[in-house]
Amino acid sequence: MNTLLQVFPVALRAMVPITLAAVGEVFGEWAGVVNIGLEGILTLSAFLAAVVSWATESPLLGVLAGLLTGALIGLFHGLVSVKLRGNQIISGVGINLLGMGAVGFGAWALWGAKSPMLDRRFWIPEVPGLGVSPFVLLTPALALLTWGLLFHTALGLRVRAVGENPMSADVVGVPVERLRLFAVVYGGALAGLAGAFLSLDWLHTVSATLPAGRGFIALANVVFSKLNPLLALLGGFLFGYFDALGIQLASVAGLSGGVPYQFIRMIPYGATLLVVALAIGRARFPKALGQPYRRE
Image (cartoon, rainbow, N blue to C red; front, side):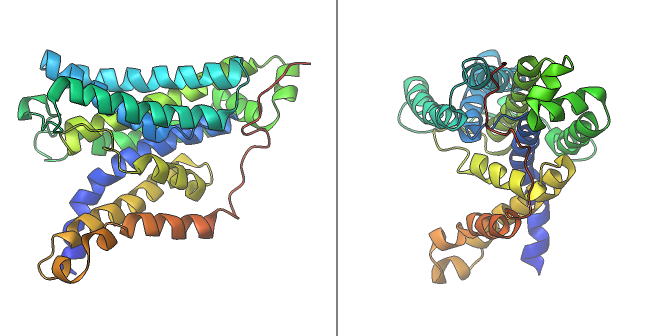
């Protein structure tokens, strides 16, 4: 029981990258664009955020670099899938491969064979008086903002319209391509923030495998949430809790000696598979999701 309670503060941090990436993907999917390249965005944004923070000694500039990296990758994905009408799945796979290759080479070129541990002056400071990461407070705020934007504004109504029936939206004057591009850039920017959090706030290092599958867990969270940003916040905490639990149990005296470490670290991924298996049949996605729009 003590272990389960001790996990809670770590779970609050572990939920951040999963929730931010999932909320951004929820917004993009409402507009009809799938981006399975979240793992690659997390990897690239974490790396560039660390590089900028290291070069400028300003973690805030590092966070901005991570956000812009995610937004630019989202723009690239949008141009391929919306403007060029390319296959959205292939584009996302390409982003994941690019992230692994570029960051693996970049980290080796800058710091050598070992992944660097960032100095404390490059970290994001905790909120004074609260002792928590500012990202822990920012994440629920962004989830609430995205929910309000989607379901309580005219912009959100148009975004959902271009995902559900882009032809009808086009007929009444809604700019389908521009809204889809905006949605995928917005989603990429949130994933970029998540990547910056990984390197500058939580793990304090960079590597080609830094996200450790959290981008894919975020995709599972999208299914769990049924495209609701507030449910994505809840799902992010649940997945983050299992992630933190696996880390904590691996360090429990006696347990790590009796159970292979790899089996303990499988906990968040096993939980992900179970939740997706239970939720995927109940989730309803926009009719035009993943389909490029061709104006007649």
